[in-house]
Image (cartoon, rainbow, N blue to C red; front, side, top):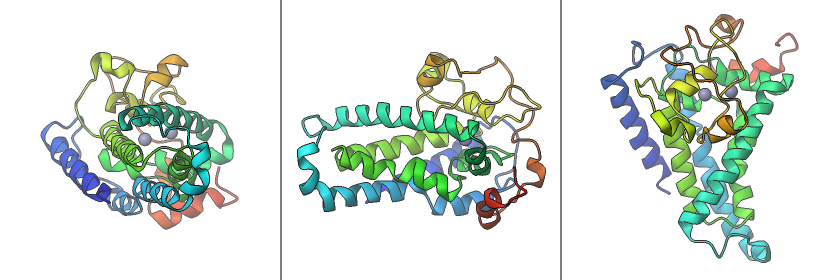
Length: 250
Ligand SMILES: [Zn+2]
Ligand SMILES: [Zn+2]
């Protein structure tokens, strides 16, 4: 399995690019860097692709009659998987912001106050399992091949790193298709900085434009990231994992 090599290469690439063309001036070891490094080690995409491949190997003989994708080429499988699963994740992301208990889980991701590529990995364990890992066995059960799942995992990682990166890049007309740093930074904006519950895109921004949840003000970034009370939010994996279940958390 060469996903870890891709992850390493993409991480190194964004580490270097952010040093060359930073959007905001911030140190490499910004607040929460080591917490996010630990989240990267428990990386959801890797586990997901692995589980998907395992599901294919163990369950394929029994699910072959329901194999919906077998006749499609790998690029076409990748395209279908991207459209279907990215839209599903966009919908789940909406719910994570709108259902109070789910928001408590998702707050872990929004506790990032200095954004860069590694912030792509800060997610509560429950969210990692439901939102990312389980998608792959589900894809396997729908008949997607391991090559398509692998390509989807790498693509998600690349766009995830890009959208969270501290890079001074604007996508121009591509912003109507792909998620990018400007758009996603506004998704992480503090309520003091502007409207919240916008820009739910994971890889494809298309859904936000279609369903009118896109918010892309020209020429400015949010002055602050996070949510009300983020300055008091726990700062390591263990305490962040427990936080949504504390009765006094809201
Ligand atoms: Zn969110
Ligand atoms: Zn994010």
